[in-house]
Image (tube, rainbow, N blue to C red; front, side, top):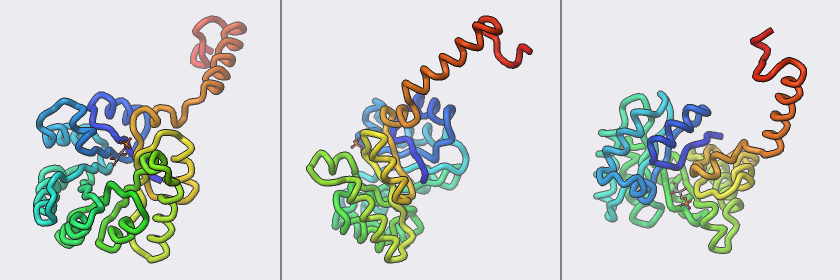
Length: 229
Ligand code: E4P
């Protein structure tokens, strides 16, 4: 399962890639607005520049008519794609968005269907040629639905129908929601900075390591490692 960074802050993105080989970066207009950069294409170019080769960048269109969404998607693909990263354009899974997805996919745009709040819009997006389907897991939970179940239902329906689309689970607040995606065989998740930093963090593990270092230093000397012997 791919794990992507759901953030547009250059420093944070750099730090995350430095720590672990993540599979890419996703943004949405809200995430981009939080950087304070009034030129979102400039911000996306800067993000793409610091991403490792072969990783995926997802960014969203703002247009509201299908024809304009396609124009915007092609523009974003032309400007941001074609280099070392794989460019995916996020189009909302609304009726107008679904129309745009079919047109954009035919023109060679890598489409990610976003703002998915149900199984049926996701299924239709897969049928329209989207490569990734992004259900908003935690936002669904907040609305009183079972976000994890909806994401897994999407995965199962799409696989049963033989479409190439993969679930890109989005909007997570904790590791458990992400673990369920992995157990079900979902293709990808995108995770915001806070839950991302905690995916592999365990206070007990930190304490266990500190005990090992302490015991070793008591015997062999302060600050010593195997390199000293
Ligand atoms: C990603 O594509 C979504 O826009 C994002 O994960 C939404 O996350 P949020 O619910 O934390 O805003």
